[in-house]
Image (cartoon, rainbow, N blue to C red):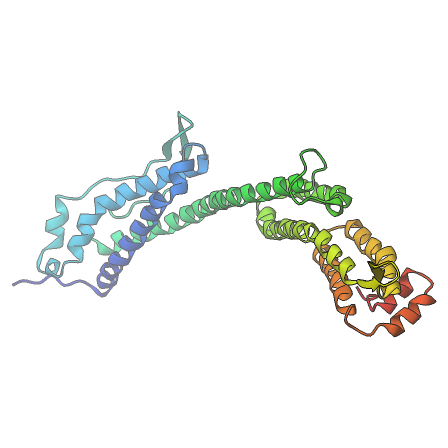
Length: 344
């Protein structure tokens, strides 16, 4: 059988055909499979225009596909290619403009398509050159589209997270509201910092609303964490009355009075408890509302927890030296030092 071998350049061109087809088919397929395309193509002009460009490229690739498949068949070396493709030669040219629909209106826009070189089907190199030119432009189109589609994806993801953020905001504002009916477990400790908490939450949401999309995406996790910590602070404050009652009871000793035949309550470690009740507790509660921020609220909550736990621990410890020091203490800072709370 007579053979019509390929030149070295033709062999290289034909070897590239499969990769070109796979890559270009993937670009078109990935574009149409992206749900953001269907959701936004009718309202985004760049998206609509470049979709039309890809459609034209897809049609051109489909026109060339049978020829490309024929070249990839080893039997083609046994065929006189010039005679075989002579009747299939075509005069093709890309349009100067693309048509697309935007918000129900037909529009046109220019696009710089490459010059077609594959009309001479008997030349694998010219087909490869056109495929290369089409692929290069498709990559540019894909990069532009990807930026738009990624932005839509970020917006959608952000919208979902923002809904959660707003739900947390509303929850916190309700928890720290002074309006009737009051929330379950709300107490005076909540109401003491209500204004500070509500001001912080509203300020954070207001500042967030002024950010760019990328800034919002970067900032959102920190705000969500901040709001979660505010809810944790509320839960901690809800337990203060019970904890303070326990401390009060722990520092009371009941003894039998044989003269009155009654049980009598007396305060034990009176100076320790008095310093706690009159100096430390008001100070730590006041500190919770002063300059409250996302950066310090965990510290403020932990400081209060530390104070309450300190009082529980001191009940079973020898506090004679502390009580002696408290007898001559001159102010809050000295009390903090005596209780070893000055570093909080």
